[in-house]
Image 1 (spheres, helix red, strand yellow):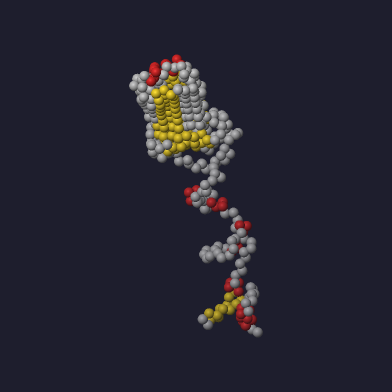
Image 2 (cartoon, helix red, strand yellow):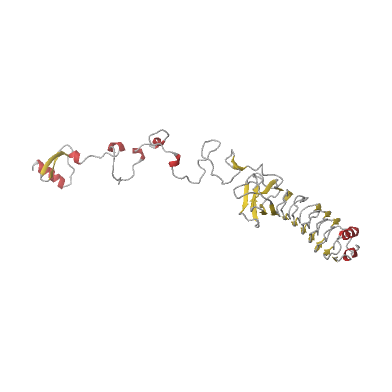
Length: 381
């Protein structure tokens, strides 16, 4: 067999040709001689990708190349390297804190909280700039509640209210409606956290400009903070506040001297000793029952007063002059003697028509009811 026939047979039988031989190729009737290794180059791919040379085009159809054959190319993306990448060319980050800065390492800032009047503190928390907000136009409360939530409802002239909690965090409630009550609430920390148990917890509430702006604006018009174990509360200078509900707390006194528009108050089930609400002409409703330490109530010159509930206290003296629109008065189960009841009847305005309930007092059976009935009142003893 000739040399040419041998090579042709090798190709036809799909056997590997010898690399040190030559090969003839026929094209358009012309025979060409060439080296076999030029037609069938050997690919050495098991040591390093560089042995292939430079791949200029084409599609890679093989399995992924192991990193051990490629080497570390990340250094090419470093600053001043051949393929440096700027941070704003990277993909959006995931919502986690893995790369946040800390006291040990440089890093990213925490996610913005979206509010005005905040500073980023050294512990990575956003702290409100509220020092200029705590003023006479702020309601200040102190609670010793040991479990559950400290909560209530509030309404303001702007429709937004800011609450600074005992741990200096701040919440803003409201959606812009000045006729809607908004709920404020925060859980008491569990033991042994800071402010847990019956420790003192201070809360500050003020009307603010918007859902993102803590700046004081307007006034609180109503506040409900029952059952919060409050031991003190200062309503500040709330000129347009009309409704106050603070029952079932531990208040020793209540001061509404700077709330001239007040119309309704419920401070029942506290520990108030003296109730002084004189000279609040707009007050129409007072509920202060079950303040067992209460010995005296001064309620003169409340011209619009209609309903008064002072039952189940320890009253030994009550004054109610210049209250001509009374509808119902309940002073049952107090310590009012006959003389104290007579003095109370004397303070009542002439021409009244209210129902007055006096049973359960030491002087109920011996007082002179005619002093009141002659003025038009009905006495229930």
